[in-house]
Image 1 (cartoon, one colour):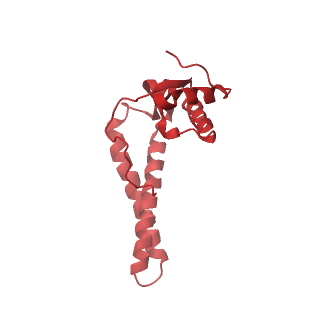
Image 2: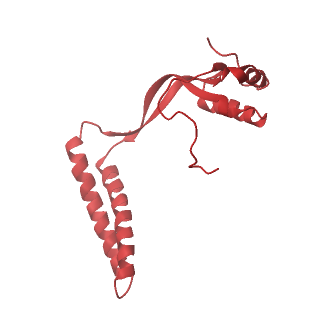
Length: 166
């Protein structure tokens, strides 16, 4: 079976089915519980990890400055210019170094210019860098009814397990 083999799984969003057999404070703990069940030859295809009470958390990484904007633009432009320069060096006669250097310098300049043009209108509206994460207050492991009792018994052997919240 390949990674692209068709499955009988539902592809449209549906509510999870099953009975709670474990409840955890972090996704890592829920994964650990499923790993424990897999090691015990439990049919893990009957399980679902459900994040309860999801929230979007935006973590601020730092202040956005002109230096940071121009530096990031220069770096991305330089990479693009380097790739174009490498491709040009394959099809041009003469040395490979001139097209690579021209591509690198041109990409660097265009990268900085495009970053500055994007940042200038937004200056003062969002002067910070951040990343977002989708997290949940707790993570329940659900099992189909036919395997729920066995799963609950196996998770009772795991130190991090605690009774499901109702």
